[in-house]
Image (cartoon, rainbow, N blue to C red; front, top):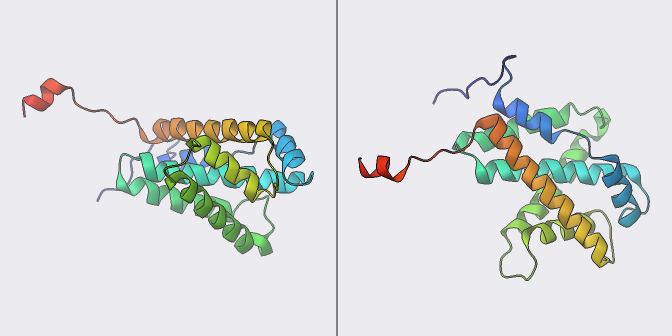
Length: 179
């Protein structure tokens, strides 16, 4: 198999470009909201829950929507390397951060795979975000905001994946008939 192609003028590879987007800091307003809603005003924890959410959904999107089977593997490898270098994590806590991320990744995967519920995907992910963040009770408004935030993260991950790796193009029906 050939290596993944280079992307962009500076030689940035698609996994690097995509993971850079996944490593972006959450919006301050989202951190404040989650802190007030679920973490007992712990802004640090709220920030981490949102970082984990963005990164987990980004990896799931890469696994689900990639055009090439190697994409998810390349993204996972790059994300692991970047998370190990994350300046927000003290060196002795890297293993703890990895475990916390993997716990959240598993929880979000389970919610995405869940079928047969009245809740849509953004609502299931939003509910999981609130539960993982420590929310006991969930007001309807908080669940709605968590769902909107989750949907935004999913859509952004999909857009950034296409921007980094390219969009799927299918041949038109006439081309297929000619074969």
